[in-house]
Image 1 (cartoon, rainbow, N blue to C red):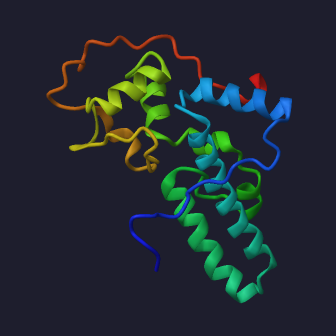
Image 2 (image 1 turned 45 degrees about the vertical axis):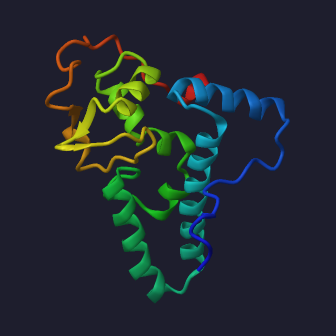
Image 3 (image 1 turned 90 degrees about the vertical axis):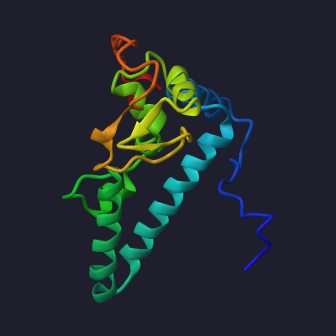
Length: 177
């Protein structure tokens, strides 16, 4: 069961930490998505790694087990908005860390135009100006589900409601990396 004071690590560090191409790619992702440190990126990479591991295990499973568990995994990822409803296991294996980072509350607030930069989106979230429906969320790393996404907005009594004009949004693409 483990000691509650010592929770399990939720990320794993890269095996080769000093590769120049890996460092530049990590730095690009940190700036593009407004991450605080590399630990947040490593957490997203670990989430992606676990999802892809489940998909690989299902590909090797017998057909009767695979049919039941594949539907469960695909429904779970579709609810989270990571893949579309008609996705397959091959689509899961082709996911990138950008797909996970795009589902973070911080990124969604920025892309909806509630903040002008991802860093401002992070600040608005931590200062309790952003709510999903009636619930105030203070974690920028919160993974927003597909059904919650339209409900993301300013809190009803926020000072910023209606003050921040949507800037010209530049959404990150994978070609820029």
